[in-house]
Length: 218
Image (cartoon, rainbow, N blue to C red; front, side, top):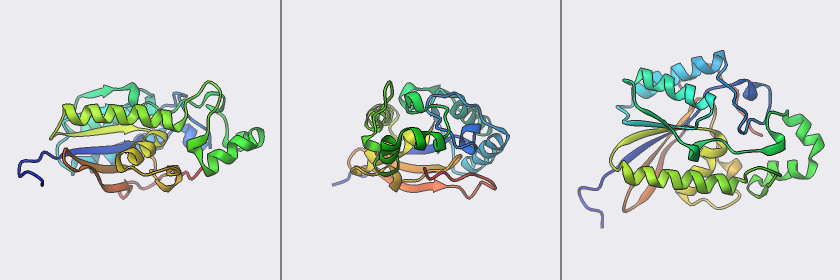
């Protein structure tokens, strides 16, 4: 039975704005692309949209430029919310695929590409992370935050290869889940957390504030 004083923690899950890697069809990984001009506009629109949702207590972000810049723009529009970069939310390390065109990878790595398209949770490249690796570190980081900041509202600014496994972990969605969850650049989703019930996804991939974005499906 739920108690009357159950604390609800509100978590905004935000994907960074557009960067060159998005529009050129590149695997990004840890390649440190900054926001492009459209990405900056997207982040500004996102910041205004988030300002309408109520106050934010904290912003936690991937340390990579495209996420950190997005977080900075959101912070300025929302009363200079404190920003903390956390390695737990940095992007997946893709080893030899990073910064390369997806069309080239499809030709050079046909077996691995088939895994990426059909069941990326099983993909393991040399000197890289797997999606289960990313899921473990991101979920562990989130679990720490919801315990430390119970009853607060905070934002996480990260990457699709982090947010999708993180959402799956919170909702206990089994493999293969990666292509069943979609988050666009500069979108936001909302997760609520209660100690007794755990996580509840109340909004996924909100993009109504955006005039222009590239939707990526591979």
